[in-house]
Length: 182
Image (cartoon, rainbow, N blue to C red; front, top):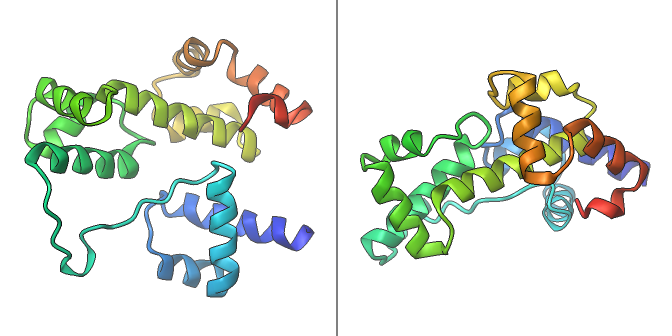
């Protein structure tokens, strides 16, 4: 069991070091783990909602037929997956896609039932929870890594979504991990 925990820690550290955006082969190389062991750890991390894995559906020249709105939604989700740790502005994502913020929000809402702001907020909160519960990082370091202007704003942002301070959330998780469902 201890070996599994240390291997999981190695995998999470490699993902964190690379900003969460790397291929399976790069992950194998940086962790030194074999295919089966790495696959098992990634599966467990996904099952426990500690990692989200995004499939590159454009690899190997695959031709997918999608409406332009579905393609824009997929592109937004790809960009969100890559940039959610540092960017929380709809304007940033719209700019990357060369469309207006209003049009992006309309397309995302039509495709998913959620606005782009809701998706950004949801991914940010998931990342904050992951960092609070599964790292020993001080809250100030999390504030810095997630590109919040200061700890006060970070605390208010988190409390508005979760109803408690980040510190209280971390303490609650440490004392009773099942109570938060992380």
